[in-house]
Image 1 (cartoon, helix red, strand yellow):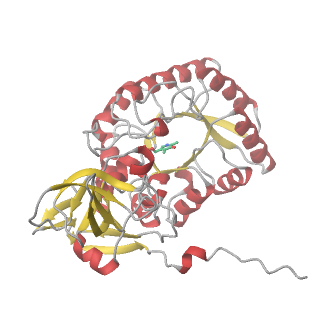
Image 2 (image 1 turned 120 degrees about the vertical axis):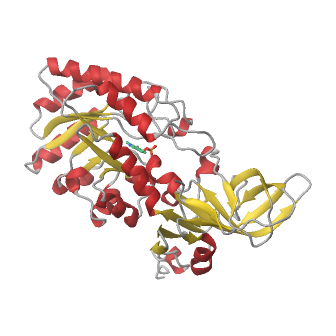
Image 3 (image 1 turned 135 degrees about the vertical axis):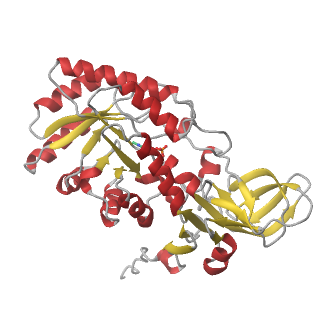
Length: 417
Ligand SMILES: *Cc1c(COP(=O)(O)O)cnc(C)c1O
C-alpha cells in the first residue's frame, strides 16, 4: 500500500485529494497519512513479535504531537535527544518509562528532568557525561539506568553528514572505553548499567553494517558478563533507509537479520527507527508561482523553499516530485526552486515534468526530517501540517503567522541621555 495515489486525475493522500487540502489550507503544507505511519510501525512490531522488544520511535524525524500520539496509541516507545523532545512525548501522551534519551550533550538540567520523569534509559556517549549523570542522580537520591553508546567503527555507506558509527565521528565511545565506562557505572551509586546502545547512521541501504555492529555489541555483552556486569537490553539504534530513489531493504528483512543474530539470548531488543516510520507517510504540497525558462536551465519557482524542506540543500537528497493534477503539455526538464536568496535553495533538479503556472506539486517522502528541520530563514512562516485518516483530514500544525515571526524579539529602549 502506498499512501499517496492518483485517483480520478488527482493525487490523493488516502481518501483525501491534495487539491482540496491546498484549497482549504494553502501552500506550502505538509500532508501525512496516518495509515502509512501505523503500517510502518506495525511492520516493525509484527517482525519482532517473537522476542522481548521495544520500538522507540526517534522523535527528531517528525516530532508533531499528533504523530507522536498516533505512535503512543500503538504502544511505541520514544528515542529523544533533548528535553524539548522529552516534553513533547509526555505532552503527546507517551509513557516516560518507554523513553530512551540519546545525544552527546545532555545538560544537567535535562538529566534531572528525565530522572524525575522516570525514563527507561540514558544512552551515554562519553566518560564526562557519565560522571555528570552519576552526580545528578546521586544528588536526587535516584539511580539512573544507563547504556553506553558504542561506536563500532563500521561504515554505514551513507552520506557523510548522517554517518555516525565511524571512529572519526563525534558519537559514542570505542569498545575499550565502553568496557571502562561500564566498570565505572557498576561502581557508582547513581548509576545502573542496564543496556548497550549504538546508532551507526541514517538512510542506510544495506543490512551488513547493522549485522557488523550487532556482532560488536554482542561480543562486548559477553565480555562484560565475565566481569559480573549483566545487561538486559541491546539497543541497535535506528537508521534503516527508505525508498527515495533506490529500493531499500524492507523493515521485515532488516528486523529478521537483526533478530537472527540475537538467536535465543534473553536480551530485550530496542530499536530507534525514525525515518523508516514516517518518511514515506508524508508529502510537501507546494504551488508553482512562476515558470522561468532560461537559456541555461528551466526554473520552476515554487512557494516552498529550503527553509521548509532542507534535505535537498543539506545533503543533495533526491525526493520524487509529482504534479498533483497532471495535464497535457510539453515535457521539459525543470529545476524546482524556492524563493530564498541562496543558489542552494532547490527541491529538485532536472525533473522531467509537464508544468504550468499555478500547478500544485507534491514533494514525496517528506514525512521525515522535513518539517522537523524547517526554519524561518528569509522570514518565512513555517508551513501548515495536515494528518489524513481515511476520508478525513485534520490540521495538526497551524501555519505560522507573520507576527509569530518576531513575537519573541524585543527592541531595547533608547539609552537615556
Ligand atoms: C537520528 C537517530 C535515530 C533515527 O535515525 P533514522 O535514520 O531516522 O531511523 C535513532 N537513534 C539516534 C541516536 C539518532 O540520533
